[in-house]
Image (tube, rainbow, N blue to C red; front, side, top):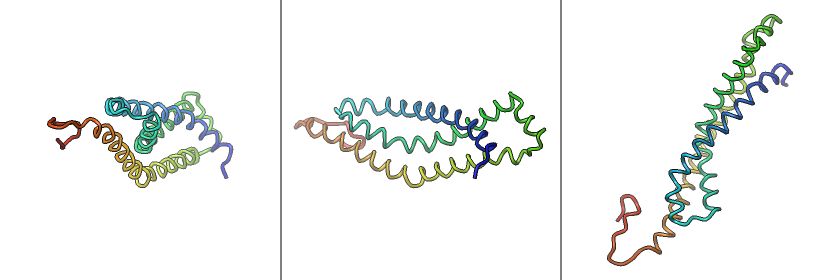
Length: 159
């Protein structure tokens, strides 16, 4: 059971973690949207297909952004507590550094486990579905654009 001290430290870490996670994920997702936009828009992909593709990209992105957001959350939370001299106040109350680090380590281990599950189990499946959906979108329009006696170079390694 978490004590109020643990909850307080987790609350201090959670806010910067959430901000970092949303900013990092949004930045990487926008980058992927720019990369895929030409392919998807030129092929006439539906809105539902684009949402599915973005959903399939999320686990792979979260595997990168969760550790970065954890680092940001811990650094920002502890920095704020140190700036306000809360760490000094906790030390004068007799709370050891190891006791202060316990909720931080617990939070870090949880994010490590979530990140590991995403990398090992969820991301390979969603990457497979992403490639399958992307190929389906590309082939659906390519079949209608095939004309006799012309070369089509839209697909890499195929003419």
